[in-house]
Amino acid sequence: MTRRTRAALLVAFAAPAALVLSAAPASAADDATVSVLHAIPTGSGADVVDVYAGDALLIDNFTPGTLKTLEVPAGTYDLAVYADGDTPDGGTPVLEAPGTEVPAGANATVTANLKANGDPTLNVFVNDTSSVAAGQGRLVVRHIAAAPAVDVRANGDVLFADLTNPNEDSAEVPAASYEADVVLAGTDTVALGPADVDVAEGATTIVYAWGSAEGESLALATQVVEAGAGAPGSVPAGDGSSVPAGVPGWALALGALAALGVAASTVRIASSKA
Amino acid sequence: MRRVRPAVLVLALSMGALVGTTVVAGATVVSTGADRTSSVGTRPQVDVEPTPAPTEAPTEAVRELPGVRELPLVSPERAVPPITVSIPAIGATAPVVPTGVTRDGAAEIPEDVDLVGWYRFGAGPTSTSGSTVIIGHRDGRGQGRGVLYGLAGVAPGDRVVVTVETGDRVAYRVVSREVFDKQVVPLDELFSRSGPARLTLITCGGAYVPEEGGYQSNVVVTAVPVGASA
Image (cartoon, rainbow over all chains, first blue to last red; front, side, top):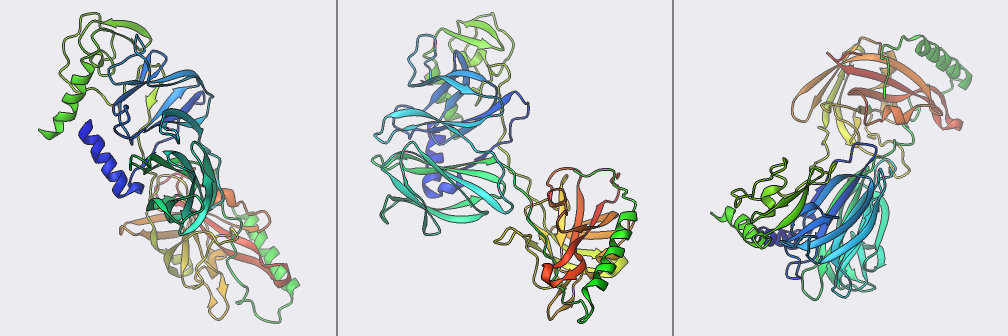
C-alpha cells in the first residue's frame, strides 16, 4: 500500500481537486450513509489502519487520502481505528469514538484527521442533503488540518472567513467551477491551492483541508453528496412584441379564454407524470 | 511485478496477528491461522479449520456487520445535450443551446428567438428518466415571432425529433398540450428530474397584459419517446 499511498498524495499535491469522491445514497429507510475519510497524513503513525465497529471490521487496510462510503443499519457504533495488524481483541486503538449514534436516514462523514496541534483525532460531520434552489450547489469546507485559522477564497473573494479546526462552513452558490485557495486568516498568504473546485448543481460538495502545515502535507480532498434541487421560479418566455399594437386587452383576454377552453378539452393521453 | 508489491507488504504486516477473533456474518469465529484476512470477507462462510497462509490479496473493504455494504463511487449521470429540435407539424426547427437559471431564479431563455434553450440541470433526451425541458421565447422585440410561436397549435400525436450532441436522434410523440396560468403552472412537475423520460416544450401564451407582467400563461407541450408506452 505504500506505493499507492504515495501516488495518491502526489495527486493530491499536484491537483487537489482531482480527488473527488461521490457515492450513491443509501436505499433502505432504516439505513444510514456513513463515509469515512482517512485524513491523517503519511508518517503520522496511521499509514495503514483498520476501522472497527465494536469487534467487527468495517474498513480494512485504510490509507491516507482515501474515502469509503458505507450503507449501515441505523444504530449506535463504537468506532475505533487500529494500526494494521492490531485488533479489538487485545489491541489498543489508535483512535476511538465510542457511542457514535447513527440515526436512520442520516448521512455523515467520520474523519480521522489531525487536530490543530497535530494530534490525531476522529470527527463526525453531518452532511446536509437538503435540496438547494435551481441552479445552485452547496459548498461546504471542513478544516481538519494541523494548521491555524484560515480563510477560504473562491475566485479571489473570501467566501469563508476565519475557519478553524475542526469546524466547517457552508454556502449555497451558483453551480460552477471555482478557483479556490486557502489563505492564513486575514492575510493573502496562500496555504493551499489554488485548485479548481466544481460545485455541482443540486449537490453538496464538501472540500476537506487536511494534512499538516508543519509537515508540509496540506492537501484538499473533495466529497460530493447528492442533495437535489428545486425548479426555476418562472418561465418568462416572451415580451409581447408580436402582439399587434392597439388591440384592446379584453380582446386578447377573450382569445386566451378560448385557448384555455381548447386546452381543457384536450384529452390528456399521458396517464401520469411524476 | 510492481503491482503485487503493495499486497505483499500488507500481508507481511498482518502476519503479526497470530490468533484473531473475528465476526463473520454474525457468527464468532476463532481463527488460528496466520492471517485474519483469509477468514473474512473473501470467504463469507464460517471456517472451522485452521486457516492456511493466504494466497490472495486482502479485499479492500470487508463487510462483516450484517447489513453493511460499501456504496460504489458513482459519477452522476451526465445528460447528453440536445443540439436541434424539430416540430414538423408547425414547421419549427431550431438549434438548441444549454441554459440554466437567471440571477433571480427564473428559467434562462436564449435572447435570440430563433434559438431554444435546453435546461442543462435537468434530464437530456437520452436520459433514462426525468423531464428534458426545452424553452423558447414566443416573441422578442425587434425580432418578431419566436420559433415556438406556434406551440399552442401542436396536437397530441404530432412528432417531435431531437438530435443530441453525439448525433443520435430521439423521436417523440406529443401526448398533451396545455395552457397554464403562470400563477399555477406546475414548474416542479415540468422540471422534475424523476419519473418517465419525457420531453417538455415551454413557451409563453395567453393574454398579453403589460401592466400584469406580460403574457399571463405558459404553453406546455409534453411528448414521450416513440416506442414508450404512455
